[in-house]
Amino acid sequence: MRKRKTPYFAILALLVIAWLVAPDLLDPERQTNDSPAAPVMAEQGTLFEVIRVVDGDTIVIDYHDSEEKVRLIGVDTPESVHPDKARNTEYGKLASAFAKEKLEGQWVTLEFDAEERDRYGRLLAYVYLDGVMFNKTLLSSGYAAVATFPPNVKYVEDFVALQQEAREANAGLWQGGAGEGAYVASLTGSEFHVPDCPDAAKINADDQIWFIDAAAATAAGYTACSCCLEPQ
Image (cartoon, rainbow, N blue to C red; front, side, top):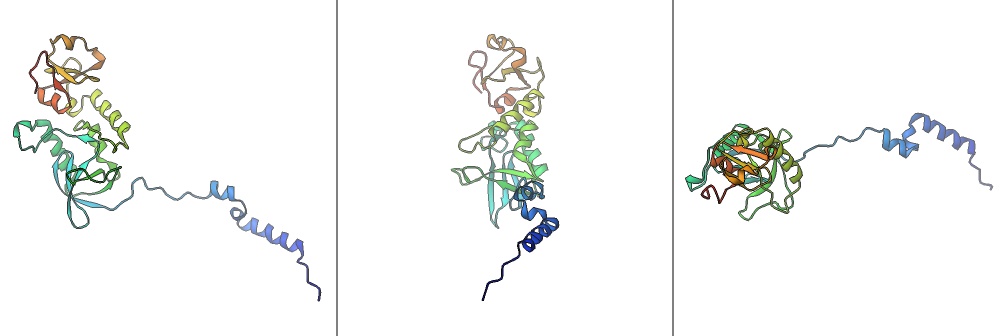
């Protein structure tokens, strides 16, 4: 018995029909480029309720039915609840009040970096409120300074840029415009000075940052000049 040959024109006809009905099936490149892309979520994760704010950079959340402290990565706000009350500053209280207003009772998502916890057992995270990273909000508002500790450095470049913008805008703890304030420091330096200090005179005008008091300068990470001031 002879095998029946499949008519090639029939196969060709089927291919033409398939192309007319669903061209993407026969054109992988077109399928990749023209088909709608799956939506990409900027931040994915479980929502956690913020039970309370400890201070500007530390919160307590309901983490899988357990209260957990979360230390925000890459930022440091001035002290406000330190056992040594002399170390607490007005800017620290302002940062804490800002965080309480924005976060307490809200639902947030967490993003971890290289390490999930610090040596004190606290969660280390980038905290997102309505999809916006609150770590960045603190920096751009001038309520925090950059404090990055490797290996948790995923957003360090963004953080430094935001801090620079806050400084230039004299926001929050960077208050004090050019030539205004009780103390002056260099944007790239580490010490603050009284205006008539010889070292202060060496700071170019476009490199100056002014502070309304010593507490604000210290909170921003500067130390008192060893020539014109007693260490704070």
